[in-house]
Structure formats: structure tokens, C-alpha cells
Image (cartoon, one colour):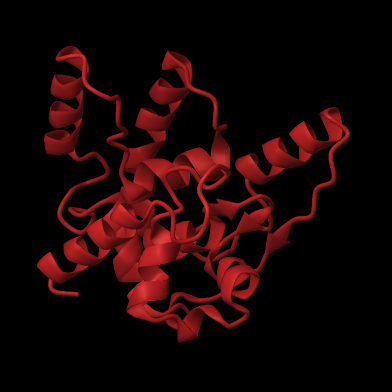
Length: 194
């Protein structure tokens, strides 16, 4: 169904609206779905460089990144995520932002189906349209309008990197901060040939 129909909402959007209502906080949702062709390749490339450099070569799980992340955790290093764009899409659409073994198990069972049924281009299109980019801001079009007052199709490499740098913690990070991460995204884009 998601192969042809754009999602009217997601589990994360519902979760955020519920949290706001529960805490009696104001909440305004910004969500506009646009075709992948209406999103600047600069933004798509920046997101791939920031979130999942092997997106086009794996089948939903980046085993090399998972192994590296586990090794870092075992050595007592700073925990870091190893989720692929496909895993993050599944989480956004169907699950929650909470962390649990059960959620990971459900996610792991859906990811291969998403990869098989949707294909990489549609996964990227869906992800760029539903990912959370700030309080109540979902998807590339809403994010570019909110932060830069322009359509997603008009985003430069630098602006794309700035937006991609928000994704690891969209409710805590601010545009352009941390500056070192924006530079890292730009360096990854360059290394990947973008």
C-alpha cells in the first residue's frame, strides 16, 4: 500500500501530538508530502551522507555499522546509533521513539519487507517526507519552509547539510549546531561523490 499511497500521518506524529496533549503544551504540526523529484538532490545526498552512507548497498541493515557500534559500546565508548534509513522509516511510520528490545524485534521483522516491497527510491522518498526535523516539523518540504522559507527543491548543499545535521536529535539540536557535525556531513558528501 505504501508503494503507491503517501502516508497521511505516522506513529511518531501521533506520539508527539499525544505527548503535547498529555503535558498541556502547544503543538502545531507541519507536514507536507512531496514527490522525491520535488526535493533537492543536495538535501537527499546530505541525509544519506549523515544517516546511512551505505544506503544503496545494504538490504535494510548495515551489518558493518552494527558491528562497529557494538564494539564501541563494549569498549565503554559513547553509545551511537547504527540504524539505517529503512529502519528509521519503519520506526517513524509504525512504531515509537521509545527504546526497547520488543520495538527492535518488531522493527527487525518489518525492515526486510519494506526493502523488498518498496525499493530504495520509494524508501528514500518516504523517509525524507516523514522524518522529524524539529518540534512538529515533519518532512523535507515542511522543514525547508520552516527553517529557510523556501521549497525543498531549492535547497543548497550547505543548507542540506545543516538540515541533515539536525536528524540525530531534532528536538534538541539547533540549525547549524553543532558546527563540526555540519562540516562532517559536507565532508562525507564530498567523499561519496556528491
